[in-house]
Length: 254
Image 1 (cartoon, rainbow, N blue to C red):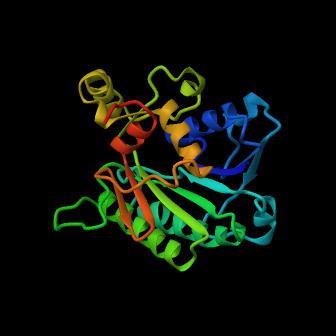
Image 2: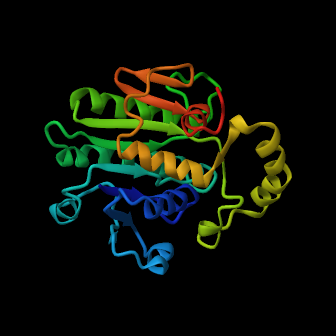
C-alpha cells in the first residue's frame, strides 16, 4: 500500500517513518517535506520518495501525480504554539491540514476510500471554553473542519488521533534524527518522563507504538472501531484519544 507522510523530521513523524519502513505491507512511502529527510537518506529504502514541497497550502498536478495511487496519509506536520506567532500556528496546524485533505480528495476512488489521519493532541477540544488554550482551540477547529469534509465526501476518511506525552525513550531507530527540544523542555522531560511511563501510562505515547498505530490507521485497519468513551464521533469522523490508541495496540487491558 502506498502511504503519504508529512512531518517526517519531527518527533511523531520520525516514529511513523520508522513504522512504515518496518511494515512489509507498505509498498511505497511518499514524504512531503520542505527539506531533505536525513532518516530517509540513511536507510536507503527504495520504497521512499521524498517530495520537496515548499508550500503546504497548495498542491499542483505535478505533486498530485506522484501521489495518485496513495491510499492513506499520516499528517504529522505540526509545531508548538510557543515557537511561532498565533497566526503562523493557525496556518501550520489548521490551514495546511485542511488544504491537504481537500487536495487529497482526488486520490480517493470508488469503493476504495482514502484515509487521512490527522495527528492532533491530548487536550484538544471541539467545544472550547473561555479559558481553553490556543492549541486546544485550533486543533479542535481543525477536527471539526475535517469532520465536515468527511461528511461532504464519504470516500475521504478523515480521522483524528490525540497523542499525549510523546516519548522516544528506547526507540533507538529514531533517536539520532529527532529534533532537539529547548533546554527547559528537556529538563522537564527528564524529571517527569519516568514517572509518567511507570505511574500514569494513560498519558504516555511511546513513539514506536504510536507510529505503528498511525500507520495502521492510514491503512484502514482501525476504521471499524466502534464509538467508546475514548473514541468520540463527530458524525462519521472518529477522534481517538490517547487511551484508545493504547487500548487498540494492546498496551492497556481496558
